[in-house]
Length: 324
Image (cartoon, rainbow, N blue to C red; front, side, top):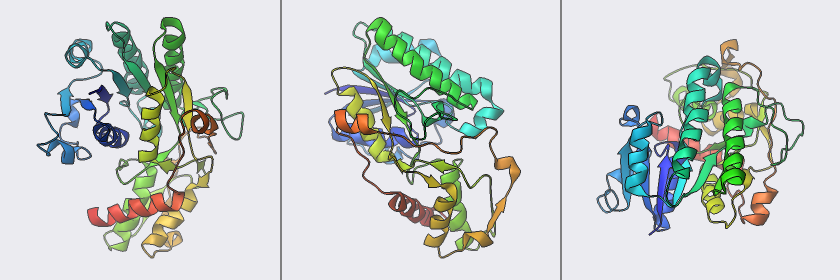
């Protein structure tokens, strides 16, 4: 069976990717930080399944800053495919901790690329890019060729990683694909992301636990898709004979206020009665609109988004009802 190694396996994308690869007959190995050992609820159902864990799913404790432990894992696992999803993933937080963001995204990426280059048979590599590399984009709908113009430490680090992936592909002949993914949501989205904050906040207000929700800029527009669709695209990239860069996006944007309204309406609430704007939640230098053109992925990979915006919100709200 093919062997895959996933960094960030306990995150939203990592958990969905694990499920996908297991269904496809992979042996899946995940790298877990010690600090994440108590926060792996997204994969607990797999870990607790005796027919899966220890047979086709394995977790290894290590840190991306620890070269020795990473090399031991690579030597033991000998992966055919590496999916690098780990790293500080919160854009707003990157303004508060830019140095740590750089270590966890840029430095960790170059470390993994070097380790993969040193393997007797270098694995195929997926690097998680982001629409934030375009920042204040020069084009209203961004393509793979759109110039990078990041506006946050997070975006700068992701741009570095994408560029470095290109260097290892062209300079060393390695199979490195960059997935430039636009916002993608699901019930497994982290609580510190604004979409989940809205959904959880609406559920809490509906249940009488709180009265107000504080947010920042509601006029930003983003291209929102469904996370399980996007991890399917990740896998598709590594099945190609030649590696390349691909945008995964829906090609449609919605304002954050649209997301807010639909989420509150699900719970029978008027959001205007419960929202307070707090300037501290407004990001410095935030892109107003990001929208991606995924025609390359659709034409070459056969990938396409399948879940509409409204359905994504409903699935998140339904899950939040059970949590609250």
